[in-house]
Amino acid sequence: MHKREVIIIPVNNSPKVSIVIPIYNCERYLPRCLAAVTGQSCRNLEIILIDDASTDESRKISQAYAKQDTRILLLHNEQNRGPAASRNRGIQSMSGEYVYFMDSDDDLHPCAIEILLGHYLRYNVDLVMGNVKRIDFFGQESEDWSGSSRLIPSRGEVTELVAGWMRAFNRYRVFGSAWGKLYRTDIISSHHILFDETIKAWEDIYFVMCYLEHTCSIYYEQKQLYFYYHNQDNHGSAATYRGYMDFTHTVYKARDIIWPERRREVVNALFCHAYSECALRMIFNCVFRMKLSRKLMANLRILVNDPVLQASIAGYDPGEVILNRRAQKLIPGKHIVLLLLVYRLDIRKRKRAREKAQEVQVKALVELKELVFGRMNRWKA
Image (cartoon, rainbow, N blue to C red; front, side):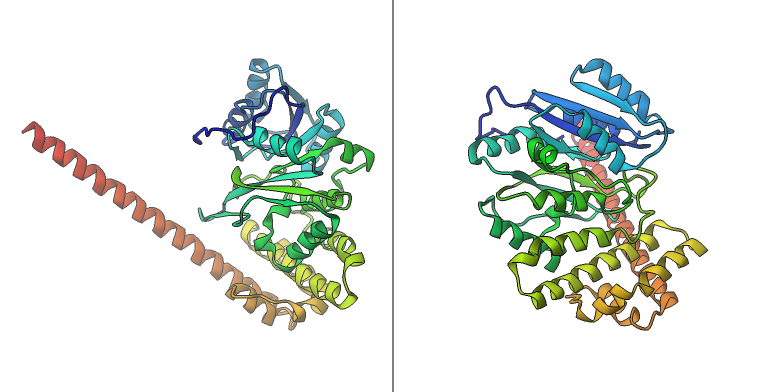
């Protein structure tokens, strides 16, 4: 449970906000998600749930919530179509002035929509974003933005943020997802912005870049409003991560956005870095999510042999990330087996570190319990 705080920005008679949530086999986390959405302090909501042909209890859970809350519109896909198609159904069905996307295994601050909507009404911007708390595969926590709340009032500053994302993903991770942001539906409809259903991975980032093409002002809220859980067993759809080369669409779109504002050599340098960073992330995801198989080796072979990656990797700056430094050395020689081994060892090391941390926590709790009960027994005596 997240502590309900006093809201500085009052929102009376607020405009309607549509919340679009694609669902696929998420019975373990879905109640948490739906409780967070239906419990929002902003009550003028349209909650659109799209069940993407789930085979577990997700559909029954959604139906139970829909019976209890008339704001919920429940849609069903007859076959699994992926998060892009599901979100598009939500866009086509929405009637709110603003739209907010959420994943079915995540959580939300109880006043998230009210805070974001308040900034829209105060600053009249094209996009409002809230900070995100991320909990990764290994239980490590981080946030998307370490700075203070900020108004980005001009088109030039918006393109500078896109360039920043291309230069340093981890500093600008807020652009790396469709969720956690409040969009104007008039911009989406007037420019026919939809999720590309041919893209099976990075489709949400591509949507954000398409929206940023028509964005001239942004407000960023530093408070952590969205809680993202990177669960290995679920990521919105069965179709996700089949498109291991789909990141290319996003990088090319980002390049198009910044092209008019910068010199050609600067754009090319940013492109090489962003392309390499995306490719290395996809290599990690393939190794982490897939069992050792011919399919995994085929995916790695396609990624490593990609001529654009081969041309870009030399201009990539891995920073202090040891794994990326090693990958940068192995990719030009197309040492796929060694690359697989390096990534497997890194993942195993992270898992062991997490298990060790959990053991320490359990041990501390046991010692605390023994201490408390010991004192209680002495008091009774």
